[in-house]
Image (cartoon, rainbow, N blue to C red; front, side, top):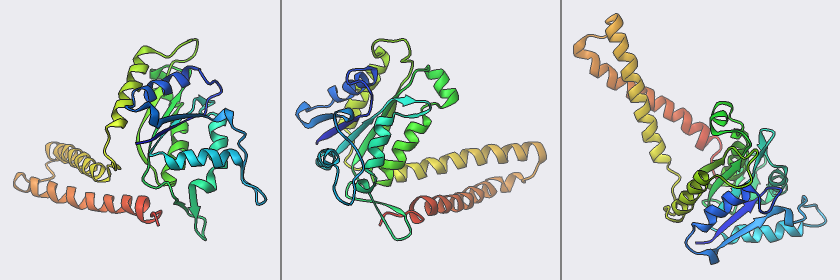
Length: 254
């Protein structure tokens, strides 16, 4: 198994890089782990006359790796410009497009990735404001569009005024390194998500209909469970069909 870490920070040995190092250090075989510091490369878009040599070099590393770790700090509520520039320039190398401009997975389909970011604010404030959300949204939009499977994400919060990574966050990074090293080959968890969705619908329907029966006597006691079961099944089938259409059929992987 080969791992490639793409570091889109401004500092090679900063706090964000420290978190990335903790993940890669926990991987079992250091010989199969490579970190690319994007600022080392002269990255610019391909032209009709000439392809970008830096993109050629990085793309070869991406193709040779089974697992990507995407690491970029969050600035101004979005990912660092270093990583954004790389993604923008890699656009037509990561995906293919049809005649109506649908973005379709390319040659990297079914590889896996872990996304990582860092930010100045605390974990509590980040939970309330979602300052790192857009960074993950951008990473996911790019990589899932390219057909990759997401394994998880990490946020290194509270970097303002600190000179080194936080110990508890380093421990979390170590756990991620061990987890991705032992993950199944394919684990998009589609079936698991649908089962979880069914359980959520069943629980919410039971609470809602139970309150209705208690407050308003809407359902007779003898028919409550039959009504409940049929409601859950019908509602789930309709909702799952809509979700399946928008996530798989409308933008299906061809």
